[in-house]
Amino acid sequence: MRGLGTLFNVIGIIAGGIVGNFVGHRLKSKMQETLLTMTGIGVVILGIGGALSQMLSVVDGKLTSSGSMMMIISLAGGAVMGELLQIENKVFQFGDWLKRISHSGEDNRFVSGFVSASCTVCIGAMAVIGSIQDGVSGDYSVLVAKGVIDAIIIFVMTAAQGKGSIFSAVPVGLFQGIITLLAFFAGDFLPAQAISNLSFVGSILILCVGLNLVRDKQIRVANTLPAVVIAVVFGYFQ
Image (cartoon, rainbow, N blue to C red; front, top):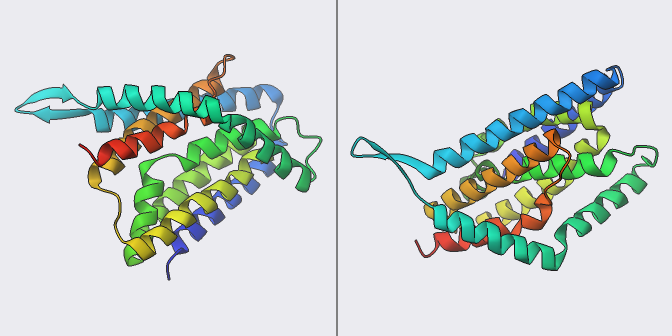
């Protein structure tokens, strides 16, 4: 049955978030702060690892890099498009709406937790590749693996930032569900290079999410999301 991978992923996020929310109330503020910082560092390393895996390769026994120009153009162009469209404001408005309907008005960290968690678990090659495989052949193994990873990430982020992180299940369900549906009707419509570019640029955006968790100056990550679209378009011409 198509879509089981996304369903498992969403359930994993919700389960991890519920446990994290239960544990978070029992942690002292200093413990929550340390946990948030360590989560941020973990996300930073995750982003660096993903970016380097796409950027570096060994050719004739020598380490070489590629994709630098694509990365710069995608990030710069995506930032301009995102700022013009004010994507982050719309994401925050959606977070505020979720906050209201979930009766979480007393939770001052709800929206920031939702945005940080959503950017972390929605962006990445696993989401795209797994959804395509699920839609084309019904193979949801990649999304099952992603669901386990996301459950752990959301558990930690919810314990540190509150239950807003749990609601990242909503954009994950929508994003992966739409890709699965498109793949079901259109087949394998993304070339390998487009997926590689998406993973590269997406990993850098995940790195930015991690930096937001460990420092005061915030990067408007949601306003750079069009960068992944530009990176995918590059893949059709490389």
